[in-house]
Each structure stands twice: as C-alpha cells, then as structure tokens.
Length: 132
Image (cartoon, rainbow, N blue to C red; front, side):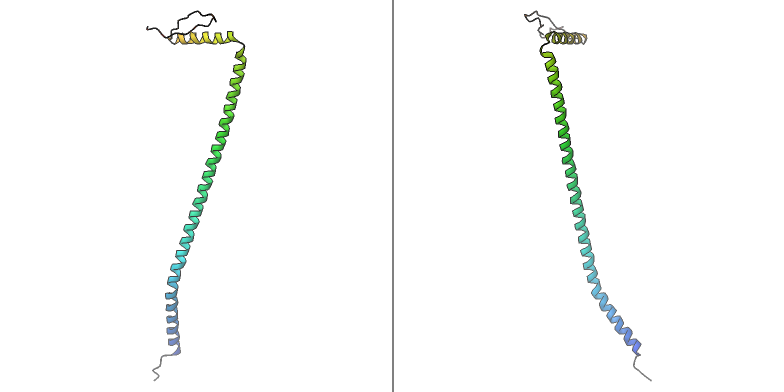
C-alpha cells in the first residue's frame, strides 16, 4: 500500500497555511484601516463643527450690524421729529403756556398741588409741595 498522502491533501495543507498567513497579515492591516477611517471621520467632524461655528458667528455679526443700522435710522427719525417740534414751538410761547397749564390741570386731577406765583413773563413758577 501507498503510505504517501494524496496530492490533494498537500494542496489543502498548503492552501490552509497560505490562508492562515494571509489572515495573520490581514488583521493588523484592518486595524490600521479602521484607525485611519476613524481619524478621518473625526477630522471631518471637527472641520464641519468649525464651519458651523464660523457661519453662526457671521450670522450674529450680520444681525448685530443690521440692528445697529436700524437703531441709527430710528435715532435719525427721532432727531428729525424733535427738530420739527422744536421749530414749531420756537415762535409760539402761547402754545407752550397752554401745554404747561393743561399739564398742571392733569397733575391736579392726580392729586398734585401747585401754587401760582405771578412773574413778569406771565409764566407760573412751580414751588415745592406744601404739607397736606
């Protein structure tokens, strides 16, 4: 009888040893691949987070600029309105006296007391409130 194993046996042994060597080589390569992939993913996430923060900062800056512009325009409107009111009252002392007197009347309705002291200009001078 033939004590030698058949050629197929040696083929499978050689194939198994080769496959085992390949697996032993492949396992560290997969670890390197996964580590590299994880590093790239972390880098991409950090870059994305940075871009989001930059965009948010730009949006806040733009909003602050627009709010400042709106505040400037509002102040210009108030200044213009004040100028119009001031110009209309400049040569109209009777209207100012009227506003003063109606203000005193409204104050008296709320419980304020005023003592009138005649002056040369005809305008009453408010004094301190006297004890009730």
